[in-house]
Image (tube, rainbow, N blue to C red; front, side, top):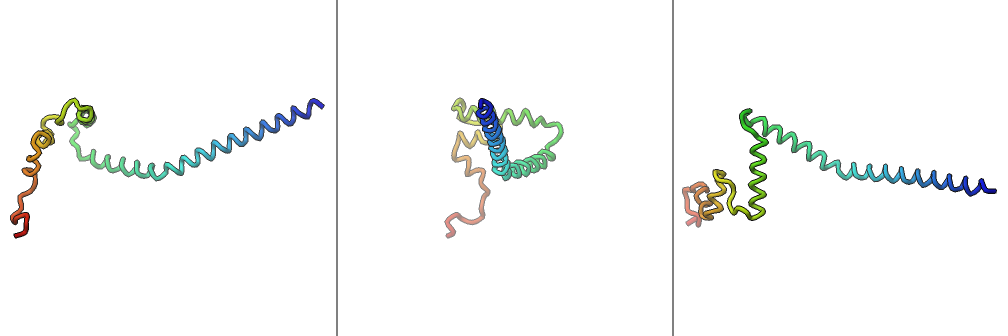
Length: 114
């Protein structure tokens, strides 16, 4: 008589283990199908960046330049410096908002059309 509850316990434990495995498989399948479009975007972006980096001279240290840009952006966001690093061209625009007009191409006609 004591063997019946033990056998019943083992069968319930087996069913719960099977449900757990099925739930995990369904979760990972859902995550894969959910992230599949993003994977394609990341692959396209990697190909685009590889194409861009193929045009960079071998002497240029791209990693150091990227670190410098990220640090300058972090300082700008933190409010430590109100202008980007010198020599970028953006510092002049940040210091003088009217400098934007000097960067615009000169048109032969007037802006009003008269």
